[in-house]
Length: 173
Image (cartoon, rainbow, N blue to C red; front, side):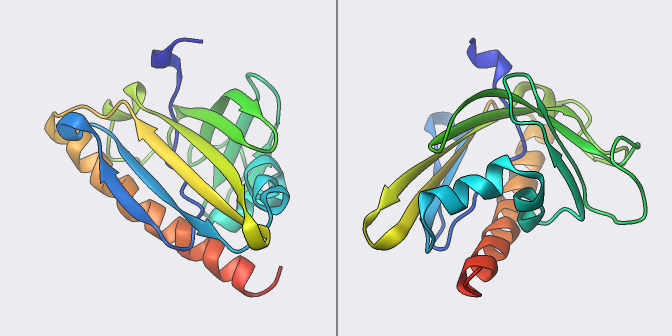
C-alpha cells in the first residue's frame, strides 16, 4: 500500500484530546484516552451502529479491504445520495488500526480539491483500567489556502467527534 492511497475524515475518538502539528504544519494528530475497553472502541469504528456514535444519522460500514464506510449526517435522505460521505477502508487490523480515505464528499462540501490528497490512520492501544488510547493521524494536508482551511475544519470536527464519544462512554454504554 502506498502513502498517497491513505486518507479520510479525521476520526478522533477520545476524551482528552491534544493536537500536534507535524513538520511543516501539513498534518495533525488527535489523541486521548477513552474510558472504554479497546473492543468497545473498535466497534465504534468498525460497525454501522457504532459509527453512528461519531455523529452521522445514517451509517453503513463494510469492514473489508476496499470496503466503504458510508455516512450521512442528515436523516432526511438515504445513504448513497448526493449528501453521503464515502470513505474507503485501505487497511485494518482488528482491534488496533484502521486506515481510511475519502472517496466521495457530500455535495455542499466546501473544499473541492484538498480532500483528494488526505487520509487518516486511527490506532487503538489498550490501557490499564479498561481504557483505550485512541490516536487519529490526519495526513496529506497541503499548505495552500484550501488545504489550510480544510485542516481547521477537520480539527474542529474532530473536537465534536471527541465530545460524542465522551458522552457515549460516560453514559456507561
